[in-house]
Length: 383
Length: 233
Ligand SMILES: Nc1ncnc2c1ncn2[C@@H]1O[C@H](COP(=O)(O)OP(=O)(O)O)[C@@H](O)[C@H]1O
Ligand SMILES: [Mg+2]
Image 1 (tube, protein in one colour):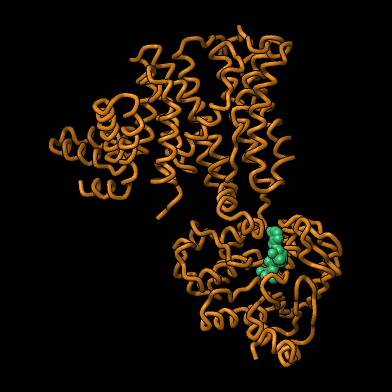
Image 2 (image 1 turned 60 degrees about the horizontal axis):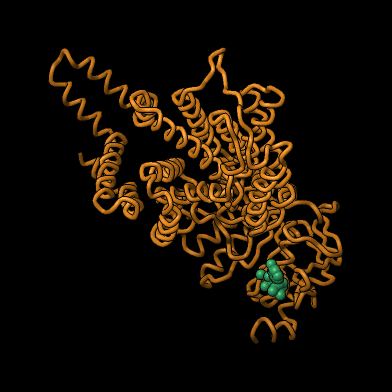
């Protein structure tokens, strides 16, 4: 138990999560419900901390070691739990839990997964390379429309469609990056802001190709070895797979030489340049990878909804994803996942209060900047 | 080894360098001294390829390097320790040094680390400490060590004495001398003219973007105009 206490001390910031959730909810739900939410989350965080420090495995160990006959089984269970315990259990839970939920919850979980991938992608640009991208939704839209158009008009199947969506989004990012990333400072933010709006306006007005405000409907569903994915559960498992792949890839790339160079650029661009880091190429790389990822999620979105329209790709979406990155903590993968989960789940839980969610975000962000500028689990201040 | 020929640089409408010519020979320590705002840092940034020239050329080992991007210039063996140290504060000492070796293939990393730890034993002791938590002098040492990690043949130092206590300055200058004796060519930018001229073989004096004097360091040190303007005598 003492190690648990140490963990609480060391990861004290994790315990701010329930507090924050409570504060975020209070305007929507009233104090009583917000307190309950905070308590449930606190229990979850405590459980996670216990898993991390092995308190539970040790508890299991003492329980089982009592009887000689149980020892073998006990040891095996302990080994299983201790393996990469939290990640393994967490993933198993994510696979199983939706089986016992109704379709509405499955859809909310799927939506959460989409935003997790989007936010992890944007984090490469904002959190790693230190560029403010205000038009990220444009690449999400490009992916969605690439699949919508190519599948309805030319019968392109889902999987090549996903590759196409990623490729077109990456190409768009490459062209924009080549022309703007050479400029220093805030030009990139301004250009991407404009880009997001231009994309939406084009989608709205190029009727012959995009269907204008009516969008494109009857987009074919994906199929896997002859099985057509159509239920919310099918799509949940597909996005879960995408989340797992993304998290794995992000961990690898952030820990790589390139990931280090991004951090150097974010910390001090001039110094990074003086080290011989090709800052332009690396920033471009972050931007292109992130945009390709947004393109993939766009394809998924189009296939799941079987319908796309410009309404889904507003500036608000870009801001929402940016909030997830900033709220969770730039550069920290668990933090960003948390940010996405909070910002998708909470408004869903309190749908009736949707009109106030912008106010909620605004207040939360301002408080964030004041009290925890590095985000809930930010990598900002390492000890 | 390095030759700046009539270079000019401007920031927008403001011209920062006019008709600057400097040569640095193999194995030399050359000091570039001048008051704040004279254009010393701009000169180094032009050599590193960070700022573009309006006129003139820079050549290194008989080849023109002006116009090349910074990472190519570093890879050709010119490494700069920028003004104000600019270490990565939230990376450890070791990570800072690894960034310095970014262009290397990683195979000889340990050899390079051992070499700079030999020059700066204090950094070896603090290898796991965050850069931002080092003292000013240690940060300057880290900045120099980091620049050495790319195995340069020419080291550009921008005001290494800035904001440091005299005893630390003399320790750092001693190390610069040692590095030079091991074969490194050094272009040293300083406002601290006295210390710089004592260390250097030759020197240039810069005023408002122009070179106004040049010569052997000993001659500059005894020049009455220099004495008055820079040595406070
Ligand atoms: N990024 C910049 N933008 C505009 N003007 C600059 C910039 N950097 C330097 N300058 C100007 O160029 C001149 C030379 O500056 P600098 O090279 O930094 O001088 P020094 O290093 O000798 O103090 C100064 O007048 C300074 O104000
Ligand atoms: Mg300067």
